[in-house]
Length: 163
Image (tube, one colour):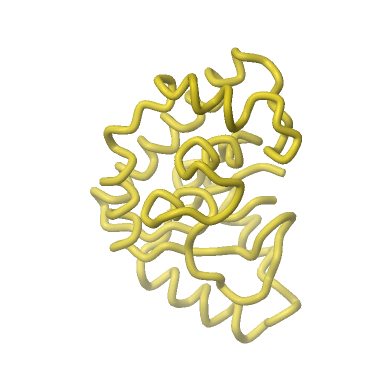
């Protein structure tokens, strides 16, 4: 299960929301596949998504916005599920709020939280068991922070899903 993030402008997001409502259970797989193929608009954070969420929010699920919006937040497009959660989106205001909330976060400094909450915890996907796995989470988090910063500067919305 890989974490994907896609940037959209407001018109594209409105069109995708309308399409998702129209299609319902039939989903929007084809549209998502096309968007994922555009590397300028898409980033994937591999399997680091859950560990990042746990380190930011201190819990397996939930947490306080805007930090919780980075990985598990957002508004569902419909009840269309990928692998783990419904496809979700953040409007440009929420993208800006998430960007501001994570801009100064240093995940690599959260060694104690990593050891207490993530390391060896079978409930944290994908099951991180080495102390060096904090570097893996930090690398993906830093890329995600840059992606959100670029999107916030450009006034873009964000689509999030685990696929």
